[in-house]
Amino acid sequence: MPELGRNVPEIEWVNTMKTIKGPAIFLAQFADDEAPFNSFASICRWAADLGFKGVQVPSWDSRLIDLRLAAESLDYCDELNGLAAEQGVQITELSTHLQGQLVAVHPAYDETFDGFAPPEVRGNPKARANWAADQLMLAAKASCNLGLSAHATFSGALAWPYIYPWPQRPAGLIETAFDELAKRWRPILDAFDNAGVDLCYEIHPGEDLHDGASFEMFLDRVEQHPRCNILFDPSHFVLQSIDYLAFMDIYRDRIKMVHVKDAEFNPNGRMGAYGGYQSWVERAGRFRSLGDGQVDFKGIFAKLAAMDFDGWAVLEWECCLKHPEVGAREGAAFIGDHIIQVTDRAFDDFADAGSDEAMNRKMLGIGG
Image: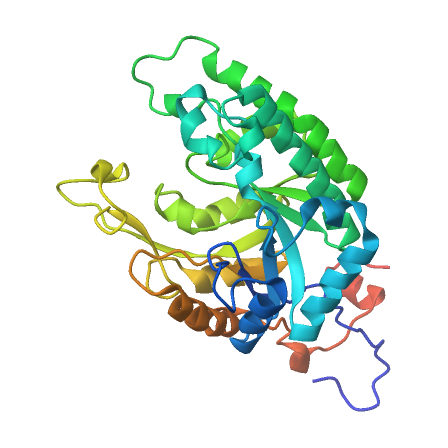
């Protein structure tokens, strides 16, 4: 320790780290026609009673939000924010997962994904894609009106049926698919840029953006667009056997949203990553409630703290075994226990001997 009375310049340790906000919960898996899940106010109160501080809102669910009105009316957005605050939570982000999926749909999935669209555009892929793009444009304005900084979506997929290279893919097939994907998304990304909101693609099997390599292919084609970012959900990396902690290091500057979801992967002599066409219960890889799977959340939350992530830790509940309301209740406590309150001082401040430039030069033997 420095001697008392020694003339040492006072050096203040400046903390630049940020504490993650949370816990929050994605409402998509809970919205229902039965109370308390059938209105925005009541589902917010339910979430707050479980200990959640924020709610992520699925923009396609009219029981919770009128997306077009939110894009057009600041008064309506103020009302929504006020309603959430009255119940003890705040809106963290909006989601357009279902609409984003429809921006790009391979014909093999036309009938399957038609159910995500309103009746007037079903059976018409071009009209459906235009409707989806318009929904994203509305979401950009609505997010801005709500004072939000990030938005969750899916990329959709044109190349997904060709994920496995058999039969051999024709030369240029994947490049053409990604060129078209970027063409469709570029005006949407520009709209989010104008709104001051990050557009975060959930890296997810079934989407053309399903891992780091595919995200980079897309990012290159949208010219490193500043609003082209990532919703990080480690569960989808477990099922693909991707090192999700290394992924966080590589893409730390693009990770703007986080879904906290658990998963397990237990390959055996009968099946692996592809799952053998089995149900979720029988698959080698399956989603689990928080704490019941294999995800290293201590490692994830440590990296989020170190990389100055100041967004929300949002529970996305999906589990083939546990009841959703049990998973939600346990999940709030689980996230709360894992959020790291970052330090406001260096742990070795007690040993600070102080310094100045002259001392530093003397200690290095480089003179005056």
